Amino acid sequence: MNTKKQVLIHILCWALLLGYYHVGDILKDNWKDGSWHFGVTMNFLHVLEFYICYLWIYPCYLRKSKIPQLIAGVAFTMAMFISLRYLLEEVLNRHFFGFGNYGAGTTTLYYILDNLYYGTSYIVIPAAVWSTQNAFRNEKMNQQLRGEAEKAELSFLKSQINPHFLYNTLNYIYSLALPVSDKLAEAVIRLSDLMRYTLTESPDGKVSLLKEVDYLESYVELFRMRFDPLFYVNFKVEGLADQQRMAPLLLIPFLENAFKHGVLNDPENPVRVEIKVIRQELKLSVFNKINQNQKDHSSGIGLINVQRRLYLIYPGKHDLEVHNDGKSYQVNLRIEL
Image 1 (cartoon, one colour):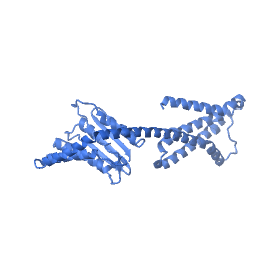
Image 2 (cartoon, rainbow, N blue to C red):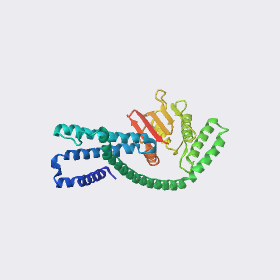
Image 3 (cartoon, one colour):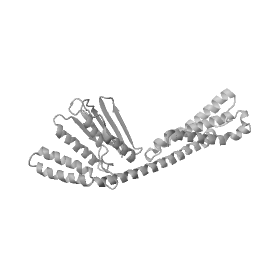
């Protein structure tokens, strides 16, 4: 649903709700006694309360790992509702119009409890609205995932014969290269390892993060053998553990892009690749100086595909930032494993 349609639906719903609340007062002239001030402030605060929860608290914190922040956000919203209502009705209204909504003998405890009653409903309602919309979004995303999975399976079955043939051929070439050159044999076996990893399958569609990083290291070493000694890449890894798993081949496009468009022979500005895992959060940072002599300035389909995969596999659980100032290129990726 596009933003314009959503806004129109919200406006219509609020118009119907507020009309239901106040059309009787308007027809009976109940607004002449000045109590309309309190209706306006209450409606304003309910709308404000609704959208703080709907646009900020629930989208950010309504998940298992964010329960403390969710509780704090709800408490903040309720405290804001009570404080603003007191300011508008008991301070400003009393100052300008000479009367407030509550009597002079109202205790603080009674005022807080009474406003907890009036404020709770517009904390619960946005939770129901947001959860319902989120359920529809997830169902739509699941349908897309099923469609993508079917396409990927068909594509894999069509291309499966060719990669296996290449993999077996590389093993044969390795046996021929071994007596001739150790360096050539090592290059062939690394290429064979890369090919074998691309054919790896698992029931849950994920692989060990250690294997994913090994794949990246083999890729880097293959390039190092090709361009050595004029090859300057800093590859740093921290915090890996055996139990960590992720979708395969999500990280390699960022290295491919850096090697394709970056400067690899500058010791003062090496390509920097950093992978760090803290608890269950993976962070990847890739930096490269842009090769100004590169004729092909397109990023290719690799980055486009990986962005699509991230959206489908890790919805709401990843952040991707790309910085390009024309001289350098940096990618920062965060994934909740």
